[in-house]
Length: 146
Image (cartoon, rainbow, N blue to C red; front, side, top):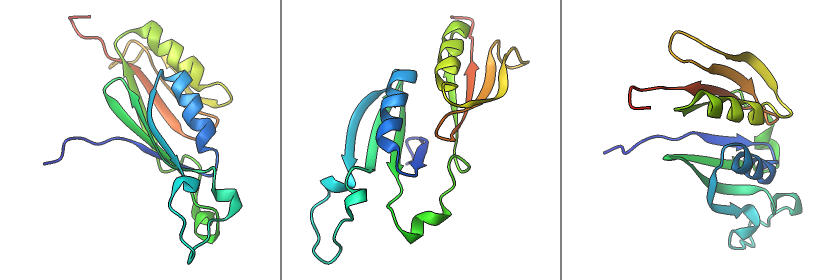
């Protein structure tokens, strides 16, 4: 049985900074963070110095949603890595003011793709590419109970 899905961001070496950024911008709780340096030593595959502080796996909790983050391992296989082009994440709030707050924080150092505005499905919706190249769709979902 599939219980759910979550976005997984793969970054090019700035995973530690990304974890801190999303913790602040999205009020995320960091449930765990492991670096490549935390892995057990393997004499057959010595760990390059520049990999030790890269994020092997980070688990953040944002509301009821899980967000996973990792860095690429330095080397030739990481050359095909393209920042942000393979992930698009949606953040939904139940309050337009909160949507604006999140949108404003995510655009810090990034670029707005679609300004925050009313749409036929949301009183506040916008798209922003953050400073890590990740595209975010920020939206408000209002129900009759709100």
